[in-house]
Image 1 (cartoon, one colour):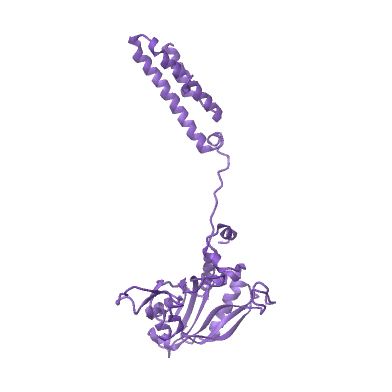
Image 2 (cartoon, rainbow, N blue to C red; image 1 turned 90 degrees about the vertical axis):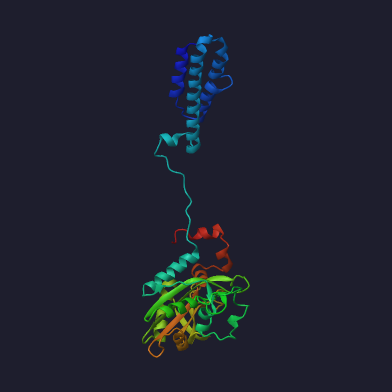
Length: 348
C-alpha cells in the first residue's frame, strides 16, 4: 500500500464521528480488529523495501495511535452519557434525577420549638452531655438519697474527675436542667432561655421509653415572675405547636427543683378531646413538667431569691413529635429506616 493511501486512512480515522455505539464498534473492527486495516498493514511490512520500512512503520503507527485515541474518546463519552452520546450533542436533554434528603422528625420539632419560644424572647443555651454531681443533681435540690441517683436511672462514668473542672462523680446527664444551672452560675437576671439536648437514663427500651432521648427545658428569671406568667407561656406554646383550639390543664406534681410544681396536659390532638387509645379515653395527654424555681436553687447559683423569682419547664422532644405526627413507637426515631424518614420530605 502506498504512502498516499496510508495518509488517507489516517485522515479518515481522525475525521470519524460516530452517532451510536454500533458505529463505534464498526470503526473498531475496521481499523483495530483482527481482520482490520492495521492488521493487514503490519502483515505487509515484510513486503516493503528495507530502505522504506522505517517511513512505512512510522505511518502505520501514526494510523494506529489516531484510531486508538478516537476509539477511547468516544467510548468514554458514551459511558458518561448513557444515551448513545446524545447528551453531548443535545444540551436540552433533562439531567439525571438526584434523590434529596430530609430533616429527621425530631430535628423538625426541635427547630419548631426553638422558633416558638424565640418569638417571645427565649434564646438557646447548650451544655456538656457528661456532667458532674453538682450540676446534674445537687444544685437542683436532689438530696443524696433521691432515687434519681440510683444506678437504675443514671449512667455513671467510671472516671476520675478533674477537681478543677468537675464537682463530684461524673454521669451522662439525665436532664438538660444541668444547662440551666450553668447559665444561672454565669449570667445575672433577667434570664430567659431554653436548653435543648440529648439526655440519658438507664431504662429498658420499649415503645414508650429509651435509654437516650431528647429534651427541651426552659426557664425565666426576673423580678416579679409569677405562676400566671408560666401558665400563659405554656398556653402560647401549646397553641402554636398543636393548633389554636388546643386547651391545657395543670395538675399538681412534685419536682425537687420547683415549688409549686405541676404537670401539664393538652387536649388530645388526635381525637380533639373526645377520647381515644392515645389519650386513654380521657381526652387529655401529658406533655411536660413545670413549676416555680425553688428559692434554694436560685441561692445555689448565687441569685438573690428575695429579689428574683422564676419558672422552669421541661418536655421530651420525642413525646411532642409522637403527638404531632401520630407516631406510636418511640424506637423508630433511632432506627434510621429510610421508609419512615421519607415521609417527612418537604416539611423542613
